[in-house]
Image (cartoon, rainbow, N blue to C red; front, side):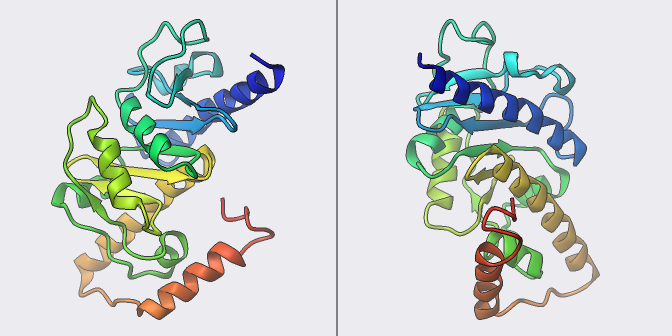
Amino acid sequence: MSDERQAAIDAVRADVAKLHSELVRYGLVVWTGGNVSGRVPGADLFVIKPSGVGYDDLAPENMILCDLDGTVIPGTPGSDRAPSSDTAAHAYVYRNLPDVGGVVHTHSDYAVAWAARGEEIPCVITAMADEFGGPIPVGPFAIIGDDSIGRGIVETLRGHRSRAVLMQNHGPFTIGVDAKDAVKAAVMVEDVARTVHLAREAGPLVPIPQEAIDSLYNRYQNVYGQNTDARR
């Protein structure tokens, strides 16, 4: 393996290990549930957390390197451990959405509550228009263990502006240009899920006109911040 390829893998290992602490920081996971993965730039590889390992014990050296079929690369650090139970889903997303560089799954309370109802989150606040460009859709019910969840994610999000999907009876999955971007989407989906839930409890929701959603999304994605990466 070239030094350049190894440096890219090491960088993704460090990023993915560190980003799991953001899931804890924002209260998006409990116990060992949830996961972050990141694609290795320029390679058909991604890095994901090991299954059932506590967040305090995660480190770059125990992140697991997989190919895009979800197969653990033998002889690499962490390869003696089982990868996350969602590995097949992440792998399916990377194989079928080549622009995706990061995938996140959480069990955040309010987003899971919407998923349990099988109900999309309507776009009724400007922050949601900014970040997701419309409602957050619901994906089909699927069983953990094979690529069924991945197929549901891809089928739901392909061609959709949202970077989040609520898999029915399960919870949110988010995608991004890299792992950090996908983690930001996971934080934001829980924030809007909570806010819209509270608003609906208080009274009827007031929709935002589609042309305003389009304008807000375009401004935030292309103008807001110091550069085009600032929103991440």
